Image (cartoon, rainbow, N blue to C red; front, side, top):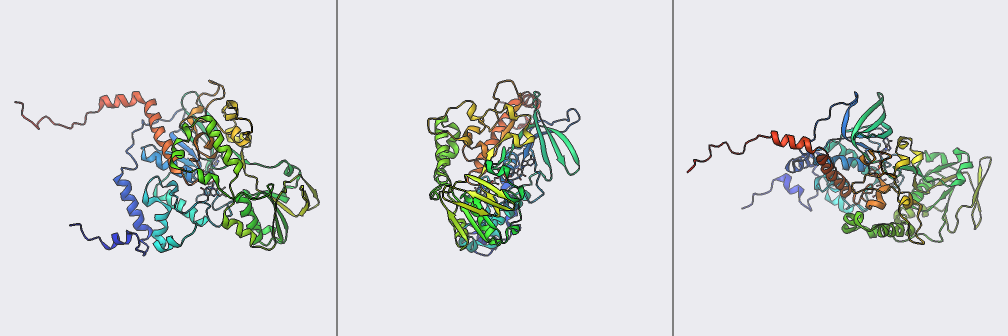
Length: 489
Ligand SMILES: Cc1cc2nc3c(=O)[nH]c(=O)nc-3n(C[C@H](O)[C@H](O)[C@H](O)COP(=O)(O)OP(=O)(O)OC[C@H]3O[C@@H](n4cnc5c(N)ncnc54)[C@H](O)[C@@H]3O)c2cc1C
C-alpha cells in the first residue's frame, strides 16, 4: 500500500494553494539535481597556465538567460564554464535596464532556460512563493519578476559569473586557444580559453540599427528605444516615436506615462501586422530540424517571418492607445528630419510633424565594426551573403549579414586558413537564428539551443583530448571483481 503523503508532499500537489516557499523548492531542486548526477563529475584534462595565463575550458561572454542556460547545460556534461558580464550583478540583459514593457511578451507557460528541470521553471519559482491560485490568475509574467527569476536561477544553479567584467578583445590563436582581454574591477586581465561562447544578446554582434537621418541631429534630441534613458525628462514634451513594433509601443507608453504632452507614432505601413508568424512557426520539429533544412528553406522561412513582421502585443498597444494624447500615424515613413534650435521637423509623405524629442525604435543590426571586442575576427567571419544568393524578391539585409554557422554554432572562416581557431568561437545569440532557428536567445527554445551546444562541446572536447582519455583508460584499474567471488571447477 502506498505511504500516506506527508504534509509537505500534499502541498506539492496540483490544486493545493499554500505556497511552499523558496527554501522547499530549492531543496527539491537540489534533490532533483542529485538524482540526475548534475553537475557531472569532472572529466576534462586539467589545464596548466600557458605563457603565465590561466586557461579556461569554456569562457562564456554574457550572463543573460542564454549564458546562464549554456553554463548550466555544460555543468550537466561535467564541463566548467566561467561567465563574464560587463553589467553589474543582477542587471544583466535588458530586463531591469532598457526594457520598458510591463510584462513579458511570451506566454507564461514557456519553460525558458529550465533545461527540462520542473523545479527550475519560472512556474515552480512563482508557485513556491505565491501559490497555485496566483499562478492560475497570472496573465503574463511581469518583466521585473522575470529578472528576479533569472537572479534566482543563477544562484541555485551556482553559475560562476564574473560581473563588472567587459571582454574587450577576442583573439583566436592557431594553438587551440582563444585569448580574451578583460577589463575587470581589479584592472586589465588576459586569459586563454579553449572555447568561447558569445551569449551577448539580441544586439550581440552589433548594436541599434540607426536610420541615417539621426546622424545630423543633436544627440540630446533623440534616443534609440534600447538606450538607457530617464523618460521623466520627456515630461511636457512633444515626442515622436519612429516604428510600431513591441519596443516602439513600450517607449511610447513610457513617454506618455512619464508626462509627455503628446506622442505620435510614425508608422511606415498602412496598418499594424496582426499575426505573430514567428510564434506560429514554433513547433518542436522546427526547433530540432531548422539547422538541417536546406539553405533555401531556412532563408525562405526567416525572410517570410521578417516580412510579415511581429505585431506588438495586445496589452502593449492598449497601454498606448488608452492615452488621448497618443496618435497612431500610418503611412508615415520618415523622409527627412530638420532641426531648428530645440525643435525637430519630421517630414513624412502624409504631413510634417513638429517634435521636441524623437525616439527611433528601429531594431538592431549585425555590425561587427560597432563592437571593438571583435576587431580581430570580424574580417574573417563568413556571413550568409558570402556564399548564398537568395531567390528573386527575397533580399534581406539582416539575413545576408547573419554569420554562416556550423553545427555547434561555431563561426566559420570566409577564406580557409586565414583565421585559425575561429571555429573555437560559438555564436549563441540572436544572429545565429538563420543558421539554427530561434534557439539562441528568446525564451521559447533557449534550453534546446543550450543543450545542443553543451552536448556538442562535450563531444568536441573528448575527440580533441582522445590521447589523454585513452591514456587514462589504460591506467584505469578500479576492479569490479576481486577474484575471490568464485572457485574454478
Ligand atoms: C526589450 C526586449 C524585450 C524582450 N522580450 C522578450 C519576451 O518577452 N520573450 C522572449 O522570448 N524574448 C524577448 N526578448 C528577446 C530575448 O529574450 C532577450 O533579448 C534576452 O535578453 C536574450 O537573452 P540573452 O542572454 O541572449 O541576452 P541578454 O539578456 O541581452 O544578455 C547578454 C549579456 O551580454 C553582456 N555582454 C555583451 N557584450 C559583452 C562584452 N563584450 N563583455 C561582457 N559582457 C557583455 C551584456 O551585458 C548582457 O548582460 C526581448 C528583448 C528585448 C530587447
